Image 1 (cartoon, rainbow, N blue to C red):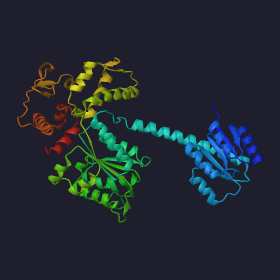
Image 2 (cartoon, rainbow, N blue to C red):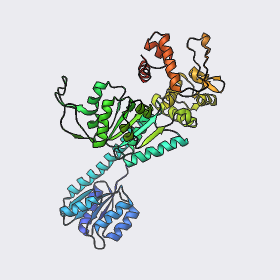
Image 3 (tube, rainbow, N blue to C red):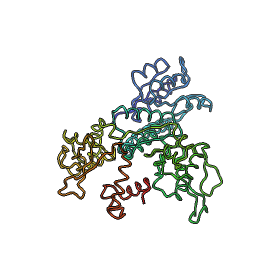
Image 4 (tube, rainbow, N blue to C red):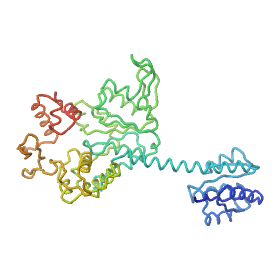
Length: 469
């Protein structure tokens, strides 16, 4: 095991000698200096990890040396030594970066103990920082990947938002583009990174429970409120609150969120005390908020307060050149997760991925790669286990129509889709297909969802989105 290096700087020969003897006996590698000139020389030659530095030297001021050495090596550990230990000098040295302060005369056993403590704290901090990096890699299981111009713009805006600590950020993009990843990246690279990141899906919580979820409640606020409970804003104090699917938030709650943004204050349900909202609020939606404002479903004043800093995440079909890097990343990630040894995919398979429209965006791509790796025993992924709609897109003129083998003989796609002359949005197509699926199965949501290759929860969300009963 490598010995920690300590430099002793003291002009009193007996003290210098005693410290060197004690530290060497304790197992450290030790060098010494009697003045500022020797201290600077030893600092360059010996490269100590810690310095025991006398504050009063014949040719130098220990405070000045402390600052000089710390500027040269920010990880350097320093224990200041003085014959006149007073509060003022202690505070000054600690402000300039000293890790410990001890006054003469001192007990050598105490010095040895404090030196060991300082090294232990440094080691613990390194372990903690390493654990945080590992945790973030595991928590952010799908990192933001891409080299296209549009994604570079996203990275730039993410960096600006993280470093500026702006209080409200709006993230726009289709489902599966990685809006939550952007929110977490902003939090993790900001001054709030050590505080909590708390997310809530505004579309997944019933309206009558959302206020309690966000703000908490006082004891006795309602029948089952047997004790005070903190809400999300209180739990995230000093950190970030991520409000996903903000477009689905009820108007009453929108008013309360607007008040928090404007006053930085809120109250628990049933409470009278104003609490401070020391949080950054990041919101996200896949909806057209301006249209919701025009339709009276979203407050215009809230929209403009949220839209101070806006990040738009492009769909995957608009950044096809990112697919290669995304595939490489997901294969590497899933190899680690499942103990696989997949090296990549062949050119034909990659070509299929680049031809596909990716309505589910990056999330759909990840799920596709994961499915292939689970089914394909070889080290190179091929088209054998590609989903049929990705493997066989049907060409109708210059439009790509997704093939489906549902209710078709021998799995041969039988589609007859005509693109209207005036054009049509994908949302209109989606609404029509959901209506047809519901009609086919007499309103059975589970069967209709299976027919369209989505979960029942997604079907219910889409029905609510398109106002289908």
